[in-house]
Image (cartoon, helix red, strand yellow):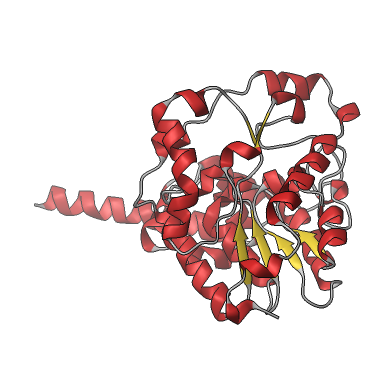
Length: 327
């Protein structure tokens, strides 16, 4: 009995020490998350300069690289800001961050990455690191199981990085960060002439995703999306979900499980109360359109995709909005 009590006490002490180690570096900036923070700060500053009823784009980096906000601004006569940063932050954070910027009368376009529809509550190093360093309040937006998962799966290396405060300076180098985001929130430095050896190697190494095998109808993602949709409608915000840009692959057409995922996603989204417009296959593009990942278009292809998106949405975005969202 004494052995058992000692064993339990030891586990409790180790758990408390682990929690103290995490707590002690909360709020310390880290280099691995700094570019994401810088990008959000720039985009929030852009939003503050907007006026009237706006068109905001919410997703990860497929929107950052894939949508030309200037085209949408001219086409729909609304200030347009691209809030896309990084899908690695996962669905709960993307929606949580969007709520900070949205206001009554806004229309929000959500070309969410397919990974967000299969979100199952598992954290990754990106959201763990970013939450601790730059947005610890988000931790309490998660469910209990997700909080425990985040604490349990925190790498020791991330805790050490926090104590070293490696991200005290803004990032002003490399492809990602505020320094390569334009005044509408879109990515710069991703044209065909910017594709070098590193980007070509990354494109050559891309393998097909297996979202169909990861997906299940009871995914926690739907709970987050339904809650966001209810919040938006209560606050007079119009939401329009569309497919993201994505690199095509024969597997997505020929494999029965993967094909079923893409064919059924629009209908499944509508069952959960989302206004999903478009067919995923119409936004799957050849490798030549991409910059360095299967979600990142090059700048020339971005204009073609945005034109296709405008054609899909039509002349009047308000027709997608329920009465409490109409002007």
